[in-house]
Image (cartoon, rainbow, N blue to C red):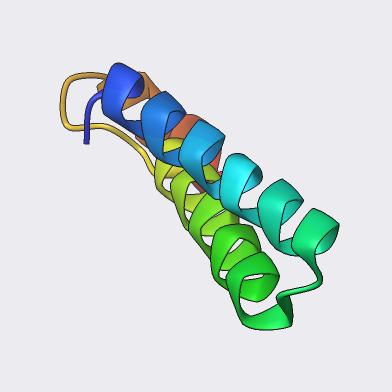
Length: 59
């Protein structure tokens, strides 16, 4: 996934998390938290375009 798309997904997740917290809707809060964490995990995955990141990931 592209960096911009990952950032967009992370921001959307954080926004859902915040709105869920404000309105007291726990399911929305948890969904937003999971979405933000997924985008962060995907961002940490080695990229095919950057083979050195794979090496750093293995060490």
